[in-house]
Length: 316
Ligand code: GLV
Ligand code: MG
Image (cartoon, rainbow, N blue to C red; front, side):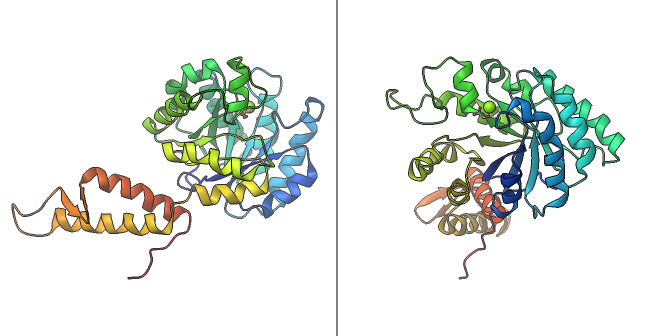
């Protein structure tokens, strides 16, 4: 796993079609935490091979700042995966942080990608283990195997839900993936969101929600983002620059939450360490609520996320 990107934020993960020179040129100007240059489903089959060189050129010659930079390769059931890796990882240099593997169905697919990356890194003179892996869960089999998939390689950085392919794999009677279905009383993806989140967290991975396809509906998007944000996801995909702005806001703690989290950590530290033998307390009142070790863990998450998002504690 790339040490550089392990702790970086992934509130907004921007998809850029690798066959479009126009979109590749525009990519660096969009302030996404993570950007992936796509060789998979946003690229027409007849453009796949030519897109590899365009992607390499964009990685080497454009200034992507300090964002996490990723390439999504084609899935193992195509004729492209190995050649995507050889051409892109073999030529892109160290600025490429990670590879996204779509439609992952089993741990073996991640292990195979890890071994292929090891060989290509060696041949290209890259540091061993430099390239991280982001794995997409977007088939019924992938969801069944998500726990073993999340534990399959030390290169794994994130696990991602792909709602469009997942809806297709489950043969759901919908024509748009990743949006609310008014006929369903509740959230039809609630189980899926939680299953992926638990598997990811149990293995120390960041957990990311996939695309929302109504790209001209910012308010619907904002509303939909709150589902996975509330469950604990780290971020979500953006298909358009306007979605990036909303994601960076929705997936950051507010200043008030950030300040409160700092105050909880301070109060807890004081309660657990100050005083003589028998006076130190594990649980203490903080305003109207009782805080303890679990509160410290919750507060720590807000502080980590807020710090990653560039927040600073308010004075006083
Ligand atoms: C993303 O790849 C999706 O299928 O939703
Ligand atoms: Mg997909």
